[in-house]
Length: 262
Image 1 (cartoon, helix red, strand yellow):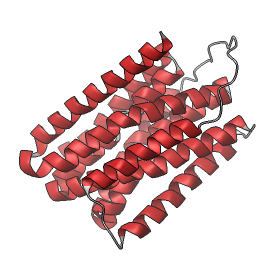
Image 2 (image 1 turned 120 degrees about the vertical axis):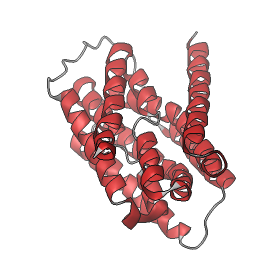
Image 3 (image 1 turned 90 degrees about the vertical axis):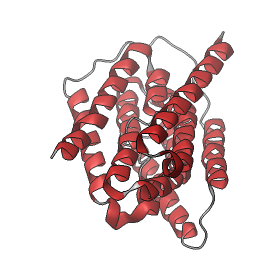
Image 4 (image 1 turned 60 degrees about the vertical axis):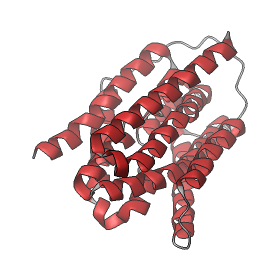
């Protein structure tokens, strides 16, 4: 029962913090926060406690490859929204792109499993390509701050808790490869993007997705350190090292963004 309680509270609590920070500092900041391992981190932790360290290390490596599918989601959603698509059509296209990417990668992994360096190259490379493939930004204009529905935050928490429970509950049946590929499924980022799109239009959605792609570089570092360190270091030291490495990568990314804007 205690483990189940953590599963249903830790990740939703982290998503709540990310949501509130995003509202305070804007759409790109929301994406930057959403790209951190606020959902996938707890999922990989519960993989380790439920299924063992080797399972979690293999899942972390597959999660790196799952970034390719997540990158496809961001580009598909952004372009559909930019071309005048509705929130629903943009979401359906984005999720379809994620599913297609996941199926293709899973099929390729049946014949050959990449090493950590290759997985990191594919994951980070897809983020760079996706960032360069986003539609052009629209001209800035005065956009009133959108009203936030009272049910916005509770919905995010419920969806996050459901995702964590489903992925960890069926992890053994999915296996470390498919479970890892599905770990970056865009739940937190979907909610942020959909609400931004509804309330601020396609440019607001694009800003969230841009921030997400920037932050996912820190997420990639987190997964790489986990895949490398779980076996030799153990559970707590490996997660501590992964979190520190992700924080350092995120700080460098924020500094780079501020320097570009300045």
